[in-house]
Amino acid sequence: MNTTIKTTGISLTPSLEQYTRYKLAKLLKFIGGDKEGSLIEVELAKTTDHHKHGEIYRSELNLQIPGQELMRAEATDYDLYVSIVIARDELIRQIKGTQDKKQTVFRKSARRLKDSLRFWK
Image (cartoon, rainbow, N blue to C red; front, side, top):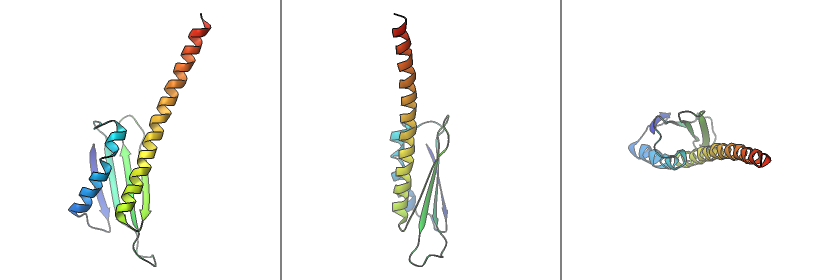
């Protein structure tokens, strides 16, 4: 899985990059290992300075798996590290939903086939 990390308004420190890659490694479990050609684009940003109290950080994740549509998750929080985890969890939820949908369609067609075979007996 190829990972691209982009920052806007903040600098990409080695510890931030390492933390991001560590948290995104959990996605491999859900996409079926190291799929060839899968790409995840990460954008970490500090939003504008118009907030009254504190800084607000935004994490955006775009996951492209060959043969599937683009999955996207975005999270905003006062802590950059928390926003990364929230966005990752949202992306995992989307991946699970896609897998469940495929399983349901397969089971539905298998059920129809089984019913039609019973009809011909």
